[in-house]
Image (cartoon, rainbow over all chains, first blue to last red; front, side):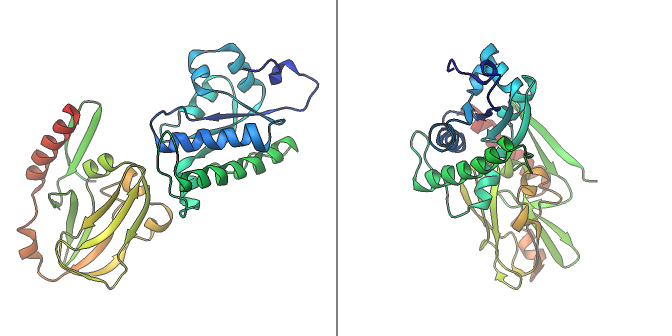
Length: 150
Length: 148
């Protein structure tokens, strides 16, 4: 967790918290994390913050504060929807929850495979998901709504 | 309202609807007059995982028993489904284009795949399993997988 967490910066515009699936050994979990890294590291590093689901599960106060104080975008790798559930249990508001399977249905040409390392389809699916998230982040920062889940 | 045979293996519960017959692979067939509605058993859908896409042969296609009638892509596998009946596909579930997750949610109801006008159902039926027989086979498979 960085020292400039959103709850420590009351004067700046709200960050958007990104919480991906923590499923290890699952292709769709890897896609969710790759998309989250792309958004938080490359595309919108100044507007977003990645919160590890495992920290919410463990009750990490900094992580809980981050999701409680800022709109969250969750990315779930399966229908258990652990990321979405944990954000809500941590007192957060889910602006939108993405399910990787639903995203894949929108980008059938990007079939994800691989676990530790995604194939090209998986990388492109993660990129497509990241771009959808970026659009939502920009909308949220501008004061808009989260839109439809999926 | 369907009646089911049910079993829980480890943390998984499986149902077998008793108003239809099954191929050994887990494709069910339910007669509706001369037409046969087909779909995936609860065990087959659970073992295969969440369905991403379901591609069913188009209406008008003639299939023989054992021919590929649909391909299901799930988060785990791609599976080719063999037709449990010989005949002509007269209806394809339109929900499969937009909401194939119905296969997971309601395998014996809204998740049906197609309706086939049977050429010789009484003969084909001899190749299929009654619910109790499929239940016994499915139970053995489920218990075997849990042990692995």
